[in-house]
Image 1 (cartoon, each protein chain N blue to C red):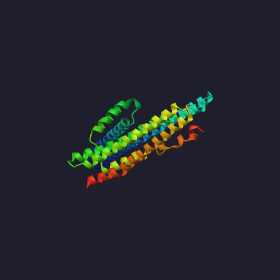
Image 2: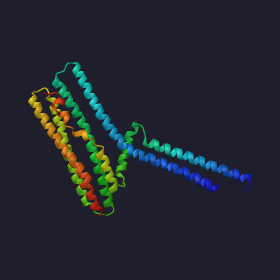
Image 3: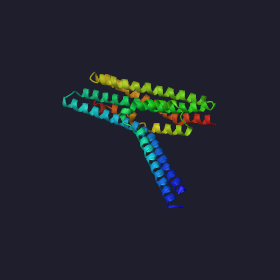
Image 4: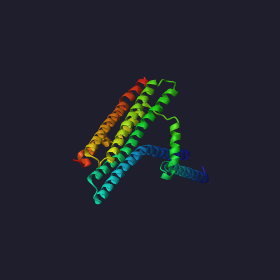
Length: 191
Length: 93
């Protein structure tokens, strides 16, 4: 009988532990998923808002340049969400890498290579933030002058595209560094 | 062994299982409540997250690699789509 009791208690606690593990791991996965879902939802909302505003402008018989301005304002709004999301994503990587450096140093091991890599990644994130903010600023400028001379609008849109290409280049530099050089510096640190 | 001893053991067995099940339900329910709280509790969640960040976390080379891949995979490839700035999209000639 005692064995039965022990087996029963053990089984109940094993199921409980498994359940708790499931809840915790599901939560850690769901945090990332919920952040992504919120970002996607807000992007969709921004698109819907722009389309609604366009509908209203068309009903009011607005000029085509006003529709262009509305389109550019919508892009500006979406770019704000994108900037926030990307910077938060890069900060998560920096934070995790920094935590690993702290762990390494707490074991009295050198982490100078890792620290240099964190500084490099941080600089690249700053470059991206600057160029993407420039892209946003140019979008807003283009929206504000949409009803001016078309040559002026074209020049501003040209600068907007240029800033977008630069920010794409900066984003690719971050991804390349995080996926290759950063982890390589960690491996060297590990040896 | 008497019937009385058997009855006592049966009662002990049932009580032990019963209490264990109740404890298990409380633990699981508590866990679910803790992790799936309504939005009104968010400030508290944030305060707790800050505490968690300040505490040492077990980050390894492997877990960092996974984090980097997960984070970069979550980024939208269309973020740099230039077609929304084309003449057609802008409605200019």
